[in-house]
Image (cartoon, rainbow, N blue to C red; front, side):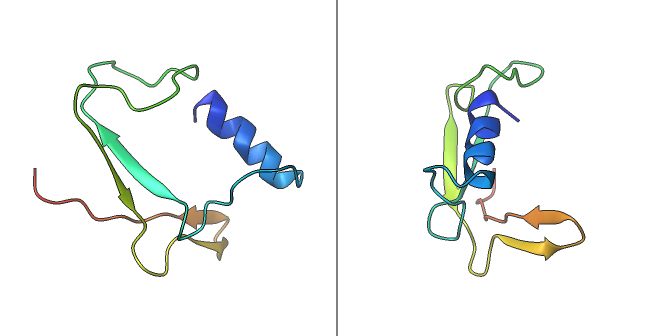
Length: 77
């Protein structure tokens, strides 16, 4: 996770002003960055080509198996 996501998660847990990651607001993003691994201080996707997609209907889901599931569909590469 990146620092900004961790801080947002704690805001949500503690009831501070934050936007919920629900079907309307959550997105999944992919990028073609050449950085070998994510750095916690990054503030967005890396690379010259990035794309974000909204959640598929019924996602995200949570409350079972100690996890949350986020699902988006991307076209062929």
